[in-house]
Length: 151
Image (cartoon, rainbow, N blue to C red):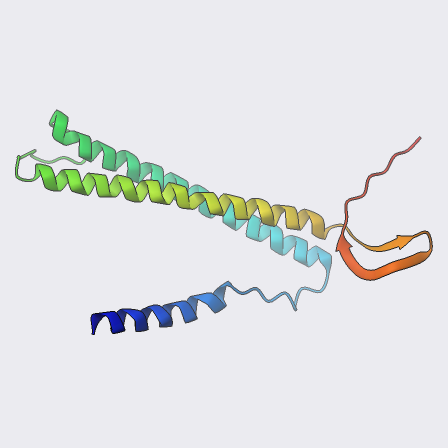
C-alpha cells in the first residue's frame, strides 16, 4: 500500500513539474527577444549554481564541525557533549556534511547550463542565410560567426 501511494505521488509530482520546464518560444518573434531570454536563463542558472554552492559549503562546514566536535569536546553546534548523544551528533553531522557535498556537486550542472545558455544567446545575435555571391544555397537560418579581415 505504501509503495502504491509513493508511486502515485511520484507520478502526480512529475506530471506537474515536467510541463513547467517546457519553454514556449512561439511568442518570441525576433532574434533580440530570444537573445534576452537566453541571457536571462543564463543569469538564473548561474545564480542557482552560486546559491547551491554557498549553501552546500556552509552545510559541509557545519556538519564537519559537528562531527569533529565529538573528538575534541566542542564545536559550532555542540551542546553539553554527553557521551550518549555523541553518536547521534556524529551521525547528524556526517549527514549534514554529506548533504552539503551533494548540494555542491548539484551546482555543477547549473553552471554548465548557464554557460550553454550564454553561448546560445551570443549565437542568437548573428543569423544568416547560406549563400555564395548572389545565389542562395539554403534558405533556412543557421547560427553563424563572422570574421572580417580588412587590408
